[in-house]
Structures are given as C-alpha cells and as structure tokens.
Length: 467
Image: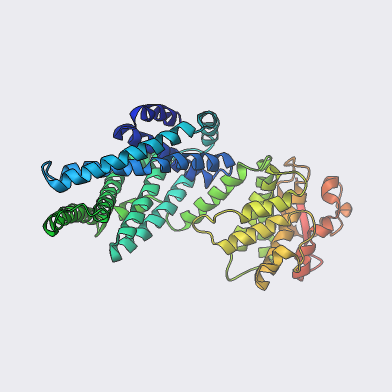
C-alpha cells in the first residue's frame, strides 16, 4: 500500500506513461488484495480501501488507454504515413485534456486516509496465513469464474467475451500472486503471458474503434491497410492464446490439478466459513466448543434413528456451520446479537460448494440459538420451504441445547449425547456431580422443545453430559 503513495508522487510530476502505468499496477494489486480478503475478513476497511483505489484507478484509465494506443500506432504505422501522423496528433490532443483530469484526481486522493489503511490493514491481513487451503479455495472460485469465461470466449470470440476473459484471468492471477506464493512461482509467468495477450487484443480493439470513430483514414485503401495490420496483430495473439489453453496440455488443466478436488472443496469451504467467523466472534473458542457439542448431539440422535434428514441438505454440516457462526453478531452489538448474526450470514456470498438456500438455512438455525423459540410462523422461517422449515427448527433445538452446555463459557463440559438415565427434561433433577451452571439449567427443557416438537422422542432417551 505504501507503493501507491510513492507512485502517486512520481506520476504527479508529469503524468508520463511509465509512472501512470506503475501507479495503476500498484492500485490494482491493492484492490485485488482487498477483493480477496473481503471474502474472508468482513472488516469494512477493505471495502472502503478498494473503493478509494478504484476511484483513482478509473480516473487514470483513459489517459493510460491513450498512452497504449500511441505505442501501438508507433509500432504498426510507418512514421511518414499520413494516417500515422493524424492518429498521433489526435491522441496527443486528447492526452492533454486527460492529463488535467488525472492531475485533479491525484490531487484529491486522500493520502492521509490511505496512509492510515497502510498501517492498519497489513496487520489484519497477517492474521490469515498465506498459502492456506482457504486461499486455495478462493483461487478455485476465481479459476471457475475465469474458465467459464474462457469457454464462452472460445464459442463466439467477440470483443466483449475476450475482454471479460482477460478480467477473469487477471482476478485469478492476483489471488495466486497475493496469497499462494508457491503456486505463483510455478504459474506466474504463464498467467502473465495470457493476461498480456488478451490485454493486447483489447488494446488493438480500442485502437481500431477510435480510428474509425474519428475517420482517421484518407482513403479506403489506407483504411483497408490499417485494418489488415490490426487484424493480423490481433489474430496472432489469439492464436497464441489458443496454443496455451486448448488441448491436453492446456494451462487450465494444469492449474485445476493443483486446486482442491472433490471432498476437499467442501472441507476448504468450511475452513473459510470458520475463519470468517473467527474474525468476528469475540469468543470463538466458545463457538468451537458449541459446534463440537452440537455435532455430538446430532450423531447421538442419528444412532437412535431420530436425527432429521433431508434429500437436499446435509443436516450435520448445516448444524456445524451454524454453531461455528452463531455468535458473529456479537461483533455488532451485545443485545439482540442473534438477530445481527442472522443478517451477517444472510449477507454473505456463498463460498464455492455452498448454495444460497444452504446458507439461508444456516442463518435461520444460528438465529435461534437463543432468544425466542423458533416457530413456523416467524418471519425468517416463513421464507423457507415447509420441509426446510422443519429441518431448521430441529437443528436450532440441537444448537440451543449445545449452547446451554457451554453456558458458563468455561469449556468444562466437552461431551454431550443422547442416552438414558441422566438429565431428564428438568436438569435440576440431574444427579450430583453432573449439574449444569445456573444459566444453562434455566429452562433447559425449553432448549430441547424444538426437537421434541418435531420428533417422537421416547421418554427413555434423554440427554446426558460429561465433564
């Protein structure tokens, strides 16, 4: 981030091509860093920094385009060619106006705020280990998005499709560059080559569009000649792109082979949700204990044939995710934190491997870990399908029960499972030495009410807990 401030100072001197390019590169890297970390760290500063960087980056965009077009005209056209001179004169005139706008943008750039972010945000970024499976999962998301754009561009080869593909590869490249150093060492040169090839295709498209819009050609003969030069340069780069990305040795296959596969995708997605929660929850150790207890309850009910099932969802996974994230709302406020939790989870973009309905179900389960008991007519449950509503209520009951076991937040109760003979519906009747803290004992029967409301639980099957 400090590099941005250094490049701002350099670029402001005369707004020459190289300093302007270097400033945009520094800004783009900061924005891509923010884009990657925003998916993991919900701190608003990442969004604000990205927005501030985008404003300056965009303000320099047209000036940079003029610099690039000037380079292409000088490369393609003979210096004595009338069209070459006409295009260079036109670009020079436009450059003067764009330099004034760029100078104003640099002058108004909030250096003080950027300097503050450059002190604070690297400390937040250091909390997330580079090279971890979380970043491999994020890279797989970007790979998937870029590969879909690659397939579309192969079908129609339109300017728009190729331009969007370049952006997709760029986003994938910057995640690898910023967060996966070992993969970047292996892939960096290839990723840069593809991005450069498609970038040059885009530059040529912009040049031709500009030349035709201003009618820079003295005759049809000169127009055809320039069109031929642009087309030849463009096709050369597209052909090279195809050589590197189509067939059994495609770079896309090479990259995909090193990213999470099969069940690893789900594990990596859960690790990402866990990391997200840990950066918000002020007592994440408690939430991890609750997640362990909740899955013990679920597994115990499964052994008894009483756990809820669904053809569309893995109930145990939904419960585990909800337990890990149930207290993220405490980052916003203490009172009513369960409602803040619901809004935070609902506001998430589902990570690869999760669907919006699954995350909505997680949010509903987490919402009812405390407070009012879940009832089918409540607003946030009304948004669910009838079968999903029943599943959410039962899982919420298990989460409430598990949360009660660690009500003192001391970690003394590490096991909970359905069994016989201990902790009947009224925990005050539990045998000596197995008593829960007062906070947990209060209305503990109500914590199991959502389960009892949807399952025919035999009286002999009650909950036991161990210290």
